[in-house]
Length: 389
Image (cartoon, rainbow, N blue to C red; front, side, top):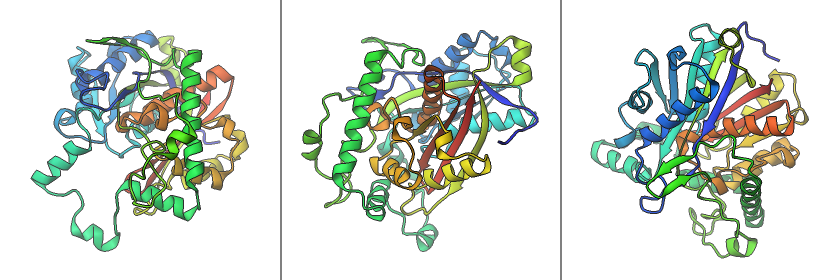
């Protein structure tokens, strides 16, 4: 396996519960996105028992950097909590992989000797800054995709890209719905067993203290899903029930060099072994987890059976099922506590949330190696390999 001169270790990780991305029904509807992210910054430092002045850099992901999530939300979130002004701040946009790439960049800066202590994470408040806010900004100031792009690639919406995956791998609607039921059942079982308790930061709201993810639908069944209409294509297979939910949430991890952790008396919980970012067809766009997982395994001399736990983002059920058909993993090791179909998908936060959940799964199951992999808009796949210490 890859062995950099300086190891980047994860000392702590925390996330908020995931709220529904709804302006009226979302449990975080009255909380500013920077506030949500800032709370995770404060908590992850507090849990690690280190002084905030040790943090040299803060990196967070956010996919829709407009309106309340504009103007460097990472820096805003840090400063509004009264944290030291000396820490640098960067906001990352790799679409759905933004939070994961924030963690990856933090690990790289530590391995390179640029930083010793970095907070990494992500946020998305889709109840306040959702797709409509982004579309509204483009309507006013111009489209994100110029004509030259379409001259090369007939770009489509992500939902249609996910339908193309169904076509390519011949994935029937019944399989997609069965996977969605699985996600909700596993998430509900995890909540019932208290499996998320250690990783979740309770959030005070006007309606009370929120401690659990809002989007889980334990009553989901094949019968209820079968009655849903296709969401993206008139005769399509993907619906609101077998696709991820629009959500609000934030997550943060504290990373250090192994030497700095020892000097501060902090206990490393995992090591970032390797990471990849791979481009794929930008039209179907969501197949990135397949080659990124393969490359990560190949260059570290591993097989799919060597990995104890996978977190494969459930942007759409077809993404995970195509990945399954190609990699042929033991599905008992995949998304063991449900995924974005049940829990929700606050875009810029999800990668950091997946890293947080993976860390806790490895600890709870006495596992050693874990992989997070995600599909990202624009045709990008991300993957990170961590090793529990």
